[in-house]
Length: 463
Image (cartoon, rainbow, N blue to C red; front, side, top):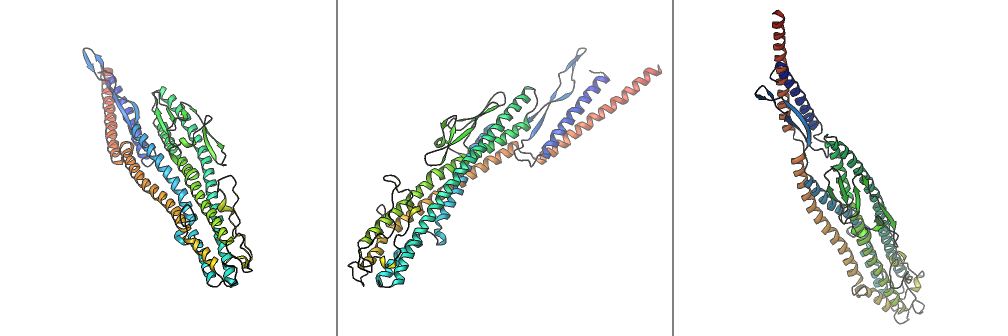
């Protein structure tokens, strides 16, 4: 290889190697802003040396392969934090809507109409023969019932919307699982052929990242380049080039549960958007709805009982003010807020009198006094409702604080990932000059050898 033709072969190999390296640099620069792209580096290796006589001489350089710079452990950490971030995001989006349904900060919530209802009895007690005030009591009751109805309906609508989100998210999980299984197949084939699977690995990392936004995942890397994906509690999503789709089934509450291979895994889901939707759909919203129903039942019962203790303007014993609640099941108050309605239609039927006389307002005073009586789970109506709103706000506040902490950790991890796998244009500019100069030098060697070869041929011909 010490001959002129041997040297020309070395120079030619160098040209090809530097040209390939320049192509890698160009690709890095082109993808500097591409989400999920992992920087590639050309691996240049010395070709095996040979003996020329008794001397061992080099045979040049070759570009052995292209290597993507990635940290799988760091990627797993990012996926874990992404699961928590997405869970908190979807939960907070849902609960902010629940808070808005009560609209207390704008003065349009239940608190104001509850106060107006009791205040209407207090006003009637001062002038029990006033027909306008009697009608005002009925109107205030209707307003109160309407707010209970509307708030309950809003909660039910939100819960149904979240249920649809659960179904849609499961569909997206299945699509991504299928995509990852297909990429596993392609990566395995490329790896067997000895080629760099960097672009396919980037696509799979992006798909895994998207999947972790939807559901909690546990990823296991195999020696053949494929990954296996399960939920953190072991429900299989991807194994090799096969995906295992999740399914949904309607439960006794009319909501969709999530199943894996026939097993209900709804309560075992611990992260991703799916977890946030489930927490709101199956936890906070039903709890809030139940508290609202309990308040409606207690108000209905207490007001009806006190109304029956008095007398209307005709001296007749008072009848139910609200339509009595009929439980759908023994011991259940479900549906009380949604069905709450005023039974009294005639202002004269309001039982303001405590003794049957026309000018008595004693019972109206007693009805107004219910506002300060512990008629709901040992609390006044206002205190019980305030506690309900406080619990909502506290849940949102705690989730927001946790979200801030997770966002900070996730940003730090992404910064580390960028430092490891991201493209530095300054570094690529340096590499560009390096490979350019090496290419020019190899070309110069080719030119010199060409001249020497021509001279040698001319000398041989002349002799």
